[in-house]
Image (cartoon, rainbow, N blue to C red):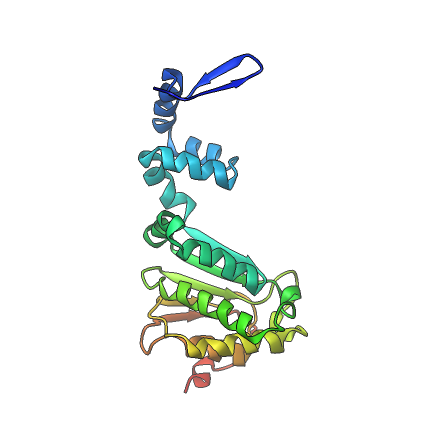
Length: 222
């Protein structure tokens, strides 16, 4: 028995064969067309679509999840990561681990100084971020971008607060990957050293730094 919804005299039957036919036609479309359609969906619509069809999930995931960006203040980044770590969104986490090649953590410089008044809150934020990163050992690259909107977070008035947050990473288990670490924006030596020391010994195979970076980055880790 199919459920029905009535609106102004129009009856929509959820098990309508036209709906099933439309879904079959959608699954048979070229990947390029599917990607174009999905680009116009909001998060909820995309979630429903991928739940309905395993084939759509398997087709779209490699293209949609090649690059993942977490952007905003630390609180927002941790909030998004916490959702992915929860059991409710486990399927999304599995898609990321199987399809993603690059995860970028992009901290908005202008937000660095906000929300760091309570030490226990900051500690929880960094524990969540560290736990999420620890799951990414199978991913090719992770990027830490601390300079956006024409600013460099390490020269921003909130840098001391950012460094205080990064220092809390030392209280969390070390990371065993990803194997490549990228710093796309100029990064303070202290912030660079704090992050790199959080990786287990010999787990990182390559580090990318912008041309304007400090000299001899390897010496920082000795």
